[in-house]
Image (cartoon, rainbow, N blue to C red; front, side, top):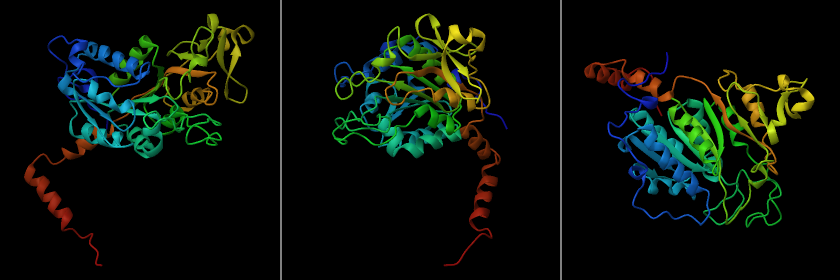
Length: 350
């Protein structure tokens, strides 16, 4: 059985607007309340600028968030939305996607919300390939509760909850998503607006579960967490399908596969451009994408791949579940089937 897209629809099966839309259409009347300089502002502005270009109607847009600074997002977008409970946004969004295939369903979450209390909800939404788009804001700290260490904080991180330094090894969100067999996995940066727009456009265009990790600066409790990656000499490794994976000044560094099959970073001048790995985002096996995710330096963050690591097609959970419901088109047959199930032979006595 293959995934289906509702007839007469546009992007990812969602009806498109018949009238032109503008950023103003997706801007609510609520005062934006984040700390000055917060990276959330850049993501919100990019999102509000992106949505009109997609043509998705406001009434067909739903944003579900959990708990955290990022989860105030639904208040600031003039669409349907729900500020839900801690870690449960993917579960609630799954219910929305199941019942309304005509909606573009976004999940806005953070590294604490998604990877701590919400870990199971996240991995199962990805595993099932529910048709939702997840924006995971990663600032490597708990910002809303005033600066405790999070699941992505580096070892040794001194915070209010770890005064002697964190002893936890941090999560790598992309490795986690790929391990859960997510069909669309990407990473971008709050301050790189063009790249952020490009990645989010691809994510919402994908039918199935999409997760985009967004490196997002918290200027109050973890300022400069990603500074080592930014700038001309930074360690951001851009991934583009069909192109050699090079980065650094003039593309002087590249990703190559070693004799043992693992990936490593080398000087292009030494290994030759022909030996640099060519990125294949559409590879069915996620092994190479996982290996690329491991190039993330989760401690000091000197290197990190950004872009789309994986983008493959799979049947979606919600499409398959809805197909089961249409087996008995006749309401009387459906009711009779339900009654037979209730009064059937699978009974037990207590």
